[in-house]
Structures are given as structure tokens and as C-alpha cells.
Image (cartoon, rainbow, N blue to C red):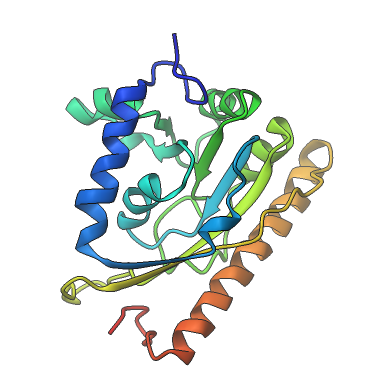
Length: 224
């Protein structure tokens, strides 16, 4: 019996415990400011699509949303104890660069149950500018008839060789929810993916501009 709104094998107590770790252990390591949290829909199928610069974003976002959320996480992390623990949290393993419908269908089932799914459609960590997108997010939106909530995070990126600052300032901006029409077939997915990419890229740019205006952004995307 799966927990309502979570993938098969997930546990309500474990999910709640994991969110507690995110809120009370991970988040205090940063000076986090969340903008627009009230925009998150209270019910219905939702896909949170977020940019990705470091391992901090998944850990922070897992406990940030007002709703329980199943995240698509790279399969390489599902080893040993973590490989047992992550599914209990409701995390879904996905192989990067591979055609694997199983994790996507598990996520679609969550959406069909009225739940929320989180995805980092860039596919890997980078500058977090949303320049490249995988098609999985468009597939989920189309198959799950879901509302999209873009989420931009800045302040977590640390260039190679740079020292991590003590409790860096991190800003998380939740964009306006929208329900894009994703056309049929491969062409529909490709066109929908580009529309979604632009939406997230625009949100990241807006957050960059806001941080620059407030003296929080430097050329390395680190914070003061």
C-alpha cells in the first residue's frame, strides 16, 4: 500500500521525517529566503520544475513546498542504505541519458492521484541557467494533465576550487503556476519542452536581476 500522493513503496512517516531533515538540518546551513511560496497550488496535480546548480537544491526544495512532493533523482545515488531510504521518502530513481519510461510512469501515477512531482529538467548540475532541457518534464505535464510551477534557486553554486562561504544567502523564487498545452507525439514534446525551458530560464533571469539590484549577486553566482 503506497502513501496517498506518493509513489509505490513510499512511507508517510519516512516522508515526513525526510522533510524534517530538510527543514531543520539542511536549511539552517544557508540563509534562505523564499519568494512567492503562496503561489503553490493547494491541490491537484503539480509538476515543480527547478534549475540545478548543486546538490543543495534537491535537499532544500524537498522540505520547502507546502505539499508532499516526489522528486525524480539520479539513479546513481540509490546505493546502499540510501538506495533503501530514498524510495521510502518517495524519491524516484531516473537514469540520466537513458530511455526509461518506468520512473516517468511512476511519476505520472503520482500526478493522476492528485499529487506533486519535482524534477530538475536540465538533467545535471551546471550553472543553472536552464539552457538545456530534457523532455521528461513535458511528458509529465502532458501525461499527468498537470499544472507547472517553475522554481528558480540562486546562491548554491560553488565553482571548482572556490571556498564555501559560511551560511551563504540563497534565494528561491516560486513562479506563477501555468498549464501549458503540450501537443501530441515527439514534435509536441519538443515544442512543449522549449516553452517550459523558456519559462524557467526567464524566472532564473528575473531572480538574477533582483539579486543584482540588491547587491547579492557576483559573477560566480555566489552570495555576500
